Length: 67
Image 1 (cartoon, one colour):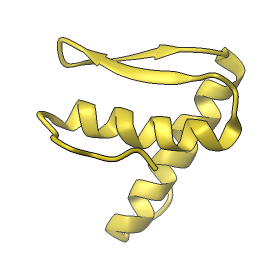
Image 2: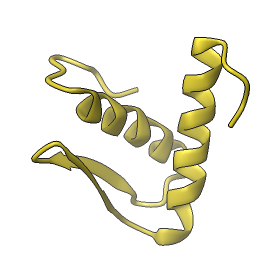
Image 3: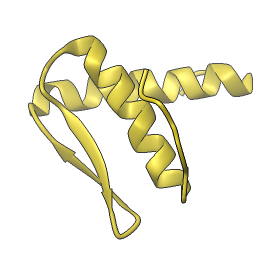
Image 4: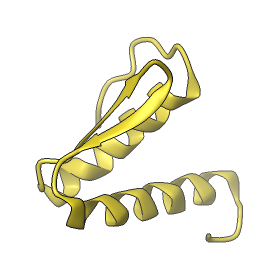
């Protein structure tokens, strides 16, 4: 898990969560924020799996129904 030292916006927090999940898949993916926008670098095949798993993790924490 990536240590969160300071969060300046929700996009930064989301990128940290996405990067934590990306490490699980070990596919060289990286999410970053630039001017408040989320950017992705890495293998395209992994991107959707990472996003889906992260959103599922967030919805479980909130008690929402799966997306």
